[in-house]
Image (tube, rainbow, N blue to C red; front, side, top):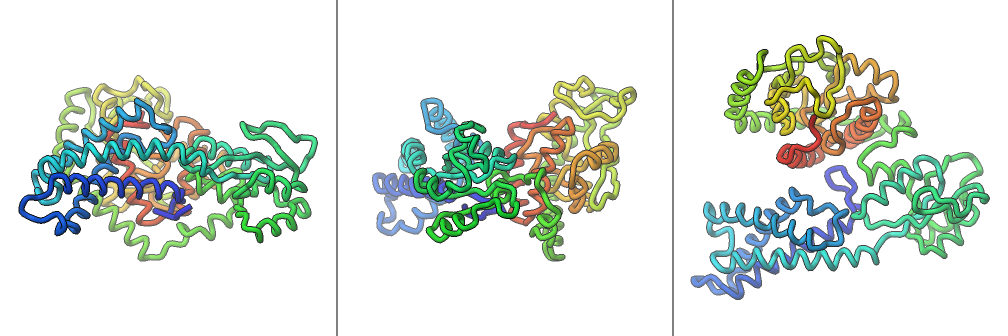
Length: 462
């Protein structure tokens, strides 16, 4: 695992992307070699070719990412993958064409440019086909010591994340009578006392310790012996956080938050977060102001009532503030029902409201809350006092959400769809607490980058 943007990224995923970069650069070299610039000898173009390759790689990475082509659940590549790759390449070609028209020297000219794009797509598809086969042979073999809830959760996360390049070989349990019992797809393949034999038989690379740390229960001598031989041991809840991007709430301890980096931010870090929020919000306001004018007119023409919707929310340290949004529901939406969560196909939503909620455009006025200092651009979503009172009683550590300013977007918003129940709120809290524990400037920038994708494709809104 490599730490990047305060996230644990599998080393093989970084290797995968860097190899694609190399192949794109190779496509540029071959293309320029076949169709060199007439005014400059090919041997003189090394620096320029490097820059052209980097620009091409950056554009392709963006189009592939926004086309969900870095989703390893789509591997191995098939005919459909090739079609999506070609579609993403077409979008990239349009973008590159715009760049070439504005900055002609940034990209290979004429035939070499077109050949480099086509050759890049072919090399990427061939590499992905080869990598999918390579991935199955290079998987880390994971043994899970324990069968408690955290053990099951770790196994579930590994099974649904093919890009991790991991395979669960099985579980170890205290009780020998449970041998052969299937917890998920993997089974219980041994007891704690059989750790040494299981490690050798299954060729285990890593052991996740997801057992209760009761005195005398864990096979400490066998663990230390295996550790000396190079077997890596990882604590279960920490490993769960690394691969899932959320906190294991059921076993969370206060010390885990007290000593977390995000809870110990210096004044400089908080000032930089505030400055980033102001800069990003100002840029968004500048570019979307004409759209906001048109939205205001559309809302006014579509249904009677005010253009803006103001509602009390709970902010940092539990302080209330008035959240500003474009109105997307009827003015009397809660006159009879009282405070309720929005539901899918909510009948209270207006025609224009349905569109702007889908595209998240109703959130734009919250930029004013950011500029006023009531919110950050990135943070947990602010909740209503009515629901905060309920959720604080039912969900442990819920009040920790108020350790930071709420945000227009956040880690929970990009990782989990809209929530409309206590269980949804519990699941989103897992992501919110992970964000707070690992808060950093680069993590915020990564969340903003992913938010753009969600806004463009209208995912997760109600």
